[in-house]
Image (tube, rainbow, N blue to C red; front, top):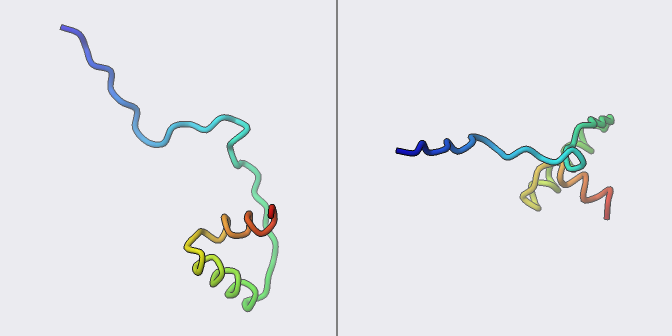
Length: 57
């Protein structure tokens, strides 16, 4: 009888060039933060993804 290989759990690993390992932070006012969150919610995406789209357009 042959043994079955167990499938790996979780997400597959990303290639080193695809990994997001650098954290960048900046300060905004409460009003700016509210506006950023609202825009991201309107597009139904995460704030970080929304910010990335705005920067790299």
